[in-house]
Amino acid sequence: MASAVAVGPGSKERAVEEPPRRSVRVVIFALMVAILLAMLDNMIVSPAMPTIVGDLGGLEHLSWVVTGYTLATAASTPIWGKLGDLYGRKGAFLTSIVIFLVGSALSGLAQDMGQLIAFRAVQGLGAGGLMVGVMAIIGELVPPRERGKYMGMMTGVMAVAMIGGPLVGGTLTDHLGWRWAFYINLPLGVVALFMVSAVLHLPKKQTTGRIDYLGAALLTVGITSFVLVTTWGGTEYAWGSAVIMELIGLGAAALVGFYFVQQKAAEPLMPLRIFRSRNFTLMSVISFLTGFVMFGAMLFLPLYQQAVQGASATNSGLLLMPMLLAMMAVSNVAGRVTTSTGKYKIFPVAGSVLMAVGLFLLAQMDTGTSRLTSGIYMAVLGAGMGCLMQITMLVAQNSVEMKDMGVASSSATLFRTLGSSFGVAVMGALFNNRVHEEMAERAGAAGGKVTEQSAQLDAASLAKLPDAVRDAYQHAVSSGTHAAFVLGSVMAVAALLAAVFVRETPLRGAAPAAPAPSAASGDK
Image (cartoon, rainbow, N blue to C red; front, side, top):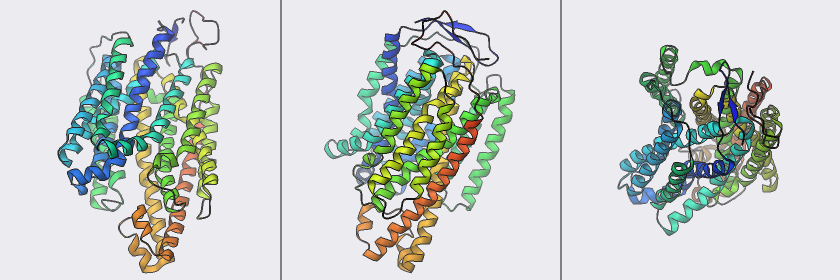
């Protein structure tokens, strides 16, 4: 392969020798294993939760098994990105794999719920580095013009993990025990660790810069506060309760402090200069909105199919297959088209339109909607997300200088994570309110009593309801998902407005089909 020119807004061009294609493919395979590790974890663990509680006890702390992991992942994401920028991506990435594997092994050895929660947080620290490390390494290894097809492959791996994770988790728990839901990470992680160590060769970095510890502490407090607000609001505590208000105040104060610290820090954790790029800022907004819509849909679609359409919860990953397969196929097509043409603006625009249409169609579902019809609606939504999943990262990376590749990747990942937290919380609040109102209207006091603890009933509870109350609950769930998906469609329209203003600047690097030039033209 020819050398590519790595440039960024306001930077001088500098030639970077690209590695042979065979080496790139081997590294990409190792990165796919790492993405699989990060994505599979929660998917595999979810089916094992009832068994874990039966063995370790501590039901009242069960939610922290997921919350601890999520908090550690979100809080560590920007730190991992900056570590890679300052001290080298290979070392940071390998360290994150090791921490993830240590957390996995310890989680499998946990003897009580407190230990499991602590070890899951260790896992989450490593997982934050896995996601950022993969995207940043691709960003440094592959020119943007060729990057789309590889990021499309990563999206495909994510879809496979979402489909297969619950199946694998259920099988491991039933036949080998819940501890293997964590031990399964070890052989996969060792393969990734060995391959990355042996094949990945990146220039060593020499820097006198130091991590912005004050900025890291403030950002961690801010992220943690708002993730807890979205996790606890409406469940553990009322939205207007003192705890939630205090968390909002603490989070807002921490983020304001973070903003001022970043203006003065010698090596800011999240340099404000990256937000001077219009494309980067727009991609951050679109990433947030995509996360908001995607994870909200993934929460309520299986719920609708189980409660209204009578689907089994056992193979919950399969319920989302139309959406995930469409997302995987379209993401790969979008990546290859971007690589061959160098054009990308059409994808965030088309993706936002498809998301809005898909969510609007899903909002029309009622108690009589067939699985085929809902599957088609899900495929439309999945196609929209497939247009957006990897293009947002590609454009964000193309909008910054090479020295900021890590913070650009971590920022895009962080905004998507925060979007997912807010999406699940806000759509969940709408859903719960609609279900409670509908149950009270259709089933009176009996309906209110059924849902007084939670608006989401499991299959066993649903089967015990009288026919009239069950019918009322199905109508209530249909009404709740309608409200949630209408909100999602509004968010998709907001993403469309942002996408319209994206400026299509040339992608750096040569198209693979073209004769290899000595250097590719850079961003202007």
